[in-house]
Length: 390
Image 1 (cartoon, rainbow, N blue to C red):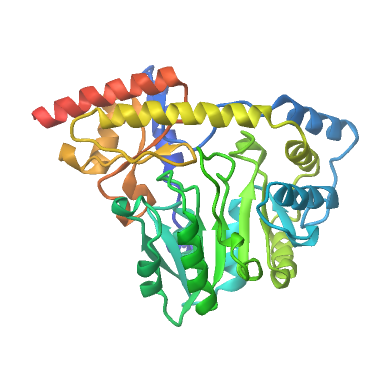
Image 2 (cartoon, one colour; image 1 turned 135 degrees about the vertical axis):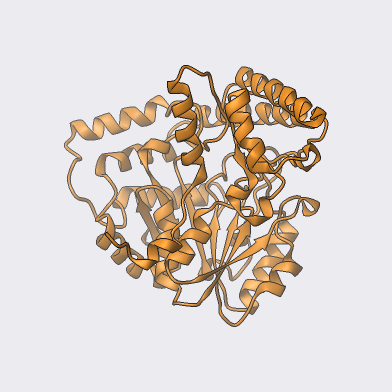
């Protein structure tokens, strides 16, 4: 069977590939510490699961409007205003099965063949994959360690061409844990306005930040009309398996993106949307506990990595990832990640899983217990010592 040529342009997410390898290794009886997958290791808060069960008991198992039930769209709008993030009417909110469809639909709705999409590198691999699949040209915006793994506005401006259509931002950032500051978002917004760019602001880790304010291009006057906000429930509320995301779109994109929803998934599951309402309107104690736990683990993992000769790590400002520089060990990051899994029983990702500018780095997800993180650091230290002796 011959596949369509467009399939050659569609990439994958390496975290799931490494997870499959790790599971296969575990099936042989070998222990593995999972630091590869970007998933909170906490259960969904009880009041959220209870809301889903109650919705099922009320018969909420039928089709619902493609952009989401009105109650949830209103709850998203109210939560964004309550948290000081943006003011947007409920009719600009579209709910999808996970947040990835927001990326897909935004790029499909906006980008013609040959249009350019600027995206962060290292960055979530789906940005480039989806852009290429849609026929656009993905253009990496380097995130350099010397700049705290954040966008350099001057470098960004130099990459804009007459074909540039969309700019993707991600803060707090996967895989680096970095976050944009106020001056950066203002400079980026000025570039977007000057060149008439649409911005896709991926803020799925908004709630998982450690100290300091969250800064978004949406804070800058004039940006709400040209920015798509992407967020969801997976990371904030430990709801990865529920598959719930949302986008807040400029008004003129709501109808075409709703059509894309209808043509692909019809709608998001009804009962889960009532769980999403409970998440937004209920107590935040569990979210606060998760954030505090991730902040503590960040200290453990970064201090542990920086104590290993040949390894250095910038302290993250959010999310639950550390992105250590391993060039001092003298092994390619892919080989090092393979040896960590096969010899030390620690599953991590090579930095190149997130783009060419991830060369020389590994990504550690610290969405695991502190004890497991310490055990993984010890195993990594032993392997690093062995590598440097060789």
